[in-house]
Length: 220
Ligand code: CO
Image (cartoon, rainbow, N blue to C red; front, side, top):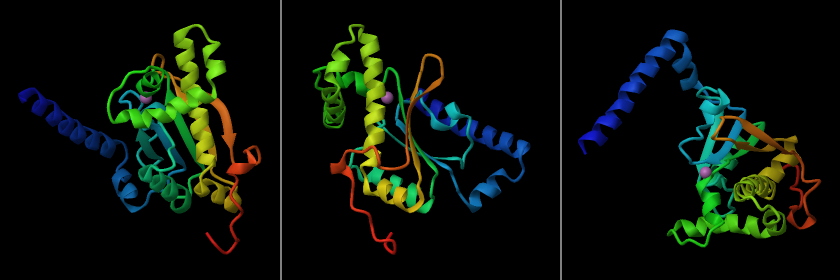
């Protein structure tokens, strides 16, 4: 217990040091941030402690609106994700939404096994759906690490499509041709982000069944 107390107190000390450093670099930093947030980006990433959105993109407080969950999932019954998405898209009017997965993602690896972990099995089941959709491609890859990496990528791509299947994103596309939805994967082993080159700002390539009727112009 003593050690735990010590380590959390260390965070508070580091916070004070960080404030001092920021104030030295830029006197108006905190004052400016206290007045407004106008981030251009919504980041939907994994909760994994090794994938901190701001640090790996070299961005500062105020620049990225962040939602993180296990395996960077877009699940349409997740009120937390939907609330973040609606606020980011309709109030903050972000220009880009990034889904960022990462190689070696524990959630994705667990989805490839038959292990029972607990409540999280229900969350991970959505990744199993991605596996099932791409089963032929995945099982044609003999190397297990390569197969895992590919499922990480396919999961990101499917989550990007899942964003496009929300009325929140489709209405914004109709209204302002934005946000652009992107799919990226972070490599924990070297720190680099790979752009999967899924970039969408319209529903034109989407299967017909997912397209909502266009809202009337005077309605939000
Ligand atoms: Co992860």
